[in-house]
Image 1 (cartoon, one colour):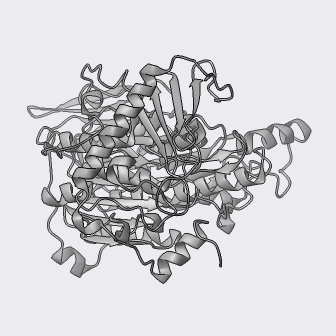
Image 2 (cartoon, rainbow, N blue to C red):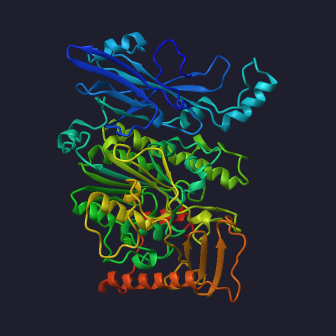
Image 3 (cartoon, helix red, strand yellow):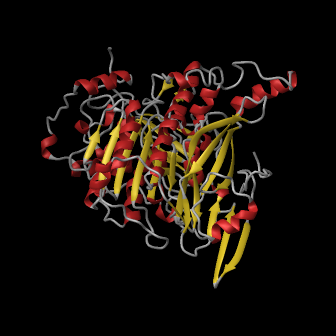
Length: 616
């Protein structure tokens, strides 16, 4: 590993800050340059080159338990006389050491002196890469072993096994580039699929300011601070980390609720739960108002193919979540989401909107055998150990989707938005779970937007954002007319680097609808967050909680006392709820009166598996 290999040309170790090599020569009257840059340029890349696992791996050294995995791209050719540039340092994975090189048509690693010759003849070539896991799951045992017996092979079972390392490896290493094109080496789709699929729209640099396709990936119950981009010390999730390195990480992202149905409803509508109608998750009488415009409907109206796949029956079509989707599969079992997503990617006509809803981190935490025990005794509780393993499980499934996007040649014209609906509590406030409180551990969410051909890469943004912002952001991005009522704001000015004060100091609203049946419940809560002040109102009990998140980030000291002046926050919250009531009335259609939902057997089975319904 590193940049000192003699059997090939390694562009740059991923930890180097900068490496730029320019090889220029004249052929007739043409200048043919080649460049490797570790910095993100003013001019963004025009393509993403996928490097895929070759299936080959080797120990780091004769006595090391750590494996180096090999990756290889599809054939690459130069575009005309354009300058070729690879942005090697744009791909950063926490706890992984990456290195890169060139390979000729015969599979030989190309020596430096032959690089000019290869480029001057415009011969196809490939990128190769390697990845070595260097995280804490190895480091602590490695240090103990080296101190005890540095010259002998490590004992069996001390380190991650070969199978465990193979299950943890990235399924894709994308390389941003300029001046090249890639020839995919499918199969992937069948002859008949390709024949009937509409031809993809190709954009060259400067032809479009927006992506062609949108893939929204929601991971249910994914707590932000349990992922690498948000600072977790040991959870392995290279594909989530990969999206972060290629896009924007919103570090202060909030869900609309601590429950699935209200939160996803806000993503799909741009409205708060009290406005869109799906105010609680455990009842058959809380659905999206029939008149509410939906995100998938906006995509469909604009000519997009639309498909949704969800492993959580909280958002079935019976609750109104299928509106605008030409194909909507819900519920499906968790392990079926990725295979069905791949099938959709092989058949959807462009442009398309694809929504994927994963559910592995949701209780009960039951990771598959290949990840079971991965984090045992690394957290304060067995439940949290298993929860972390479920995050790694879904990360691998997401990686397979990203790999298919790259294989189909779709990755470089697809915006990928990774979100979570809510977080999860592990006894920070007395219990394990979600959907009963609106403390930070259950309402802080993941929000990562990746589209490196149109947006800067590797950006961390601390502007407070929320679920209701997603709909208006996409509306402005694609130039569509906004719905009559939208309670969020567009992030497009932020993403494009334009000055905005609207997002920095605005109130965010949080909701919890309790109980198993329709109507009000004693645990119902509404909250407003303004800067670092958070006011929580138990609406039926008329009880209040007030926290200063700057001084008390764990929300342990309730500052509310009788007579305390909370009028500004209280006024904001009650004005918001009145606005939601008016919007909800506007979107409630007459035929909603007396409506009831009859759950199908598959939905009942899914809800029981997720702990929403009792019984076996």
